[in-house]
Length: 108
Image 1 (cartoon, one colour):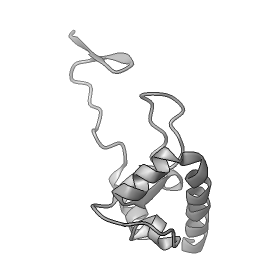
Image 2 (cartoon, helix red, strand yellow):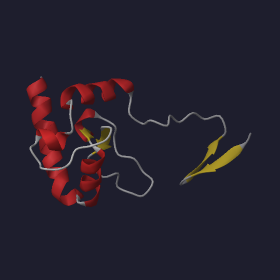
Image 3 (cartoon, helix red, strand yellow):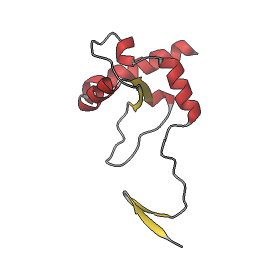
Image 4 (cartoon, helix red, strand yellow):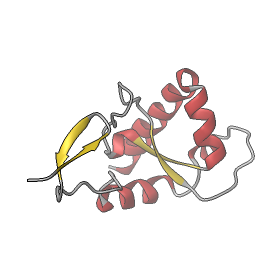
């Protein structure tokens, strides 16, 4: 059996790990819910540009770990808003989590 080193652990060669951790159904749900950059929907002034990206709102809890890829932890952001949220997470995470909760309740 052959093994290879991956960040933080060893895996057997041939073990499949998808490069995209977000399941297609979850991706479709979040894109339908948000439609545009969430910062724009919230009226946060910024220069929205570039391709929209799914962003994990909650922190992963450790270097190299991933947080959950569920609709209650994902938003659609432009690259500028994504970077702003990443750099100033303590300010923007609560705003984005409140948006997700409100949007999910309205969608039910």
